[in-house]
Length: 304
Length: 304
Image 1 (spheres, rainbow over the protein chains, first blue to last red):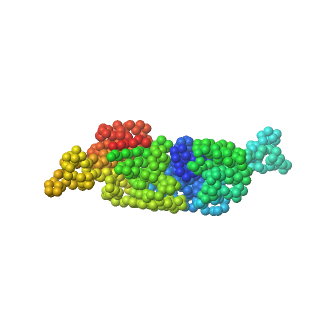
Image 2: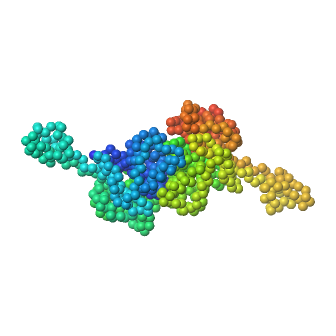
Image 3: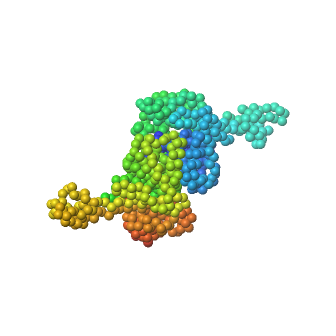
């Protein structure tokens, strides 16, 4: 059981050969979730040897170019690679038109199904769920309708305590699933062996909160409370707090304040403005508020 | 006087970190013409240190992704760089909708004027002209409406033959422009000194024909006759002539046949399918028909 986050791009606004715009790949419970898709994301996926067919869900935070201009290229490449499986795209209302107009005009309709999940709620909502993981939106505050995403493992089955179980020969293998599901064992004389004495607690479910782009919005702390990892944009340092307010972005210090408020395990910074040459200044500024701060860097992998 | 062609990308279909899709920069008579704009073109322009503000005209051959998916990113970056000058975009009917829908949905209207020149003629037509250069379309034959582009220098002024002129003290500096314009010199007694004896012929105007993507279409030879450089796509070798027919592309041999028919000075091949590992096979195949054949390679510059 682990959560693996690969940074494909972590810079804002304008891409260059060494600074790609936002995209991340989250591996969680056998899901490969692509989060945002700036221009050139497909090239980054190739560079880091991600098998394209594994990506079944793409989450787009908002329709600014540095988060979405790579999506049409990726969708087209899926077609050229003869993809057949469904692709789910979660993003703001309008994302379907954004992609479909391009497919129409390039006369390159996808030969696999694309399901668009268009979002317009201002409240956090559950947008994806399977047996082991769920994804909810984190409403952010930017110049345009924007959501962050909270990826949460579900609480798994209880683990069998075999040392205890073998002491009760009346418990058979066919009873194990009930024990994993948390049920007590009922003997034929209707006496009970408590589940707790036969199983261990399941591993703590992991969670990842992705928050980009946004002004300082302390209200999100409640939604992302106790997340294991928080990625929070830090386009600016405090020296340009005026610009952060004007452009509805955050500073490294503000990102750290959110991390502290939400009591997360680890903070990752990113979406750096190109005006800053030394990214360590971001870490330095945030660390004064929240110690376990890390920098997103292209190609870096975070594993829990 | 020279013509300078920079290859920014020369591969077909799917980009990777080492194989970019089609884009070229043509420098001719102080114009910087961008020709096609695959995903990541803006990064290639940065890599090769092209000043973005110099680009005032972009020519898009057709609306397939590997020729146009980089355009919206470049247009957005122009805005972020506070461009003020007009951008002219020449491309198939639909290109305006293609860009404007994306600008609308990303809420990022350009803060500089963009003039779309939408093309739908099936005949060659003049689409750009200034004092020194003109650009015409080359109607191609592909799965979707496609034009190549013929860039031609205009015939320049005649060059003064100063050795001859100084022998005629009656010719004054204020007469020079008339001589450059080809007029004879008329003495006050109305006798004539022929222009030919006072000037040299102007330098031969240069021309560049860009042809991608297309089936073998010998009719274009007439339009591009005697061009100094022809770029002609060669997606396949003859071994996959069947695929060339099916996908409406050309083989290296067919590109060379066009070069020969049109009597061009030099042939450049490109738009290679990723199925081929050794690009020299393209040159080898074409050279059997047309000797002065070169391979487009990312970053390569051709100068006349």
